[in-house]
Length: 318
Image (tube, rainbow, N blue to C red):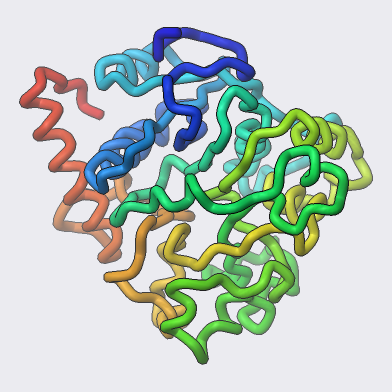
C-alpha cells in the first residue's frame, strides 16, 4: 500500500512492522513533527515515522507531509463518552487520541512520540524492548503492558488547577536524585511517587484486547471524570504498576533541566529525546533569541532540516 493512502487504522502504510508514530490534528505542531522526523533520520534510526492524522488535519498539512515523503495514516479522534472539561488545559482534548497506537495491530511494535520532541541520540533499542503480549496485557496479569517514562509531578510552573499532591516530594524523579548515574540508565519503579507515566513517549505492542479495554474505560464516566491528565491518567489507572518505567533520557521533559526541578539527574550528553512540554514551544521563538538551551538545539536541527529541504526544492515555510 502506498505510504500516502488513507487506510483504516488496522492497515499498514509502510513495509516495516516496527514504526515510530506521532499524532497530528492541526498545523500548530507541524514544524515540530517535521523536525522530529528529520531528527530520527539524523540519529540513524532504521525505522520510519508514521504521522497519525485525524479528520480535522487540513490539506496544507497533508501537502507538507507528502512533499517530504512522510507516510501518514488516518486514526479515530478519541474522546470519553462523557465529555470532560479541559478548558484550563485545552491540549488534553487531543491527548486521548494518543491511545490509538494500541489499535494498530498491523504493526508488531509502535513507539508513539509527541510532535514537540527532538531526538538527539539513536534509541532504536526501544523497538526490541521486551513487553508482554497484548492478550496478556489486557487480562490483568501482565507486568510489562507498555513502556514509558514517569510523569514529572513537581508542577514547576505552579499551575493552580493541578492536583495538590503534584509536589516534588511525590515525584519519581526526585527519588533518583541520590543516584544520578543510575538515573541515566534506569527509571524509578512504576510504583514510585504518584506512579503515573508520561504519555509523550509510549512503547506498545498493538493489541485488539488492550485497545478494547481502553475504549471500554473511555465509556465509564465514573472513571474518566477523575482523569485530570487524559491518556496518561487512564493508563496509570488501567495498568497500575504493570508497565515498564524507562529512564528520563527517552522522554527528557525540558523542565527537568531547571535548577529547581531535576537538575541533579539531568545530563545534556545522555539525553536521547527532548520533550518540549508547555509554552513556549521552540517554534514560538526565534533562533538565537531562545529562552532555553534545549530550544536552541531544536532550532539548530530545524535550520539544518530547512536547508536540506531547500536543496531538494522544498521551501513551503514549515
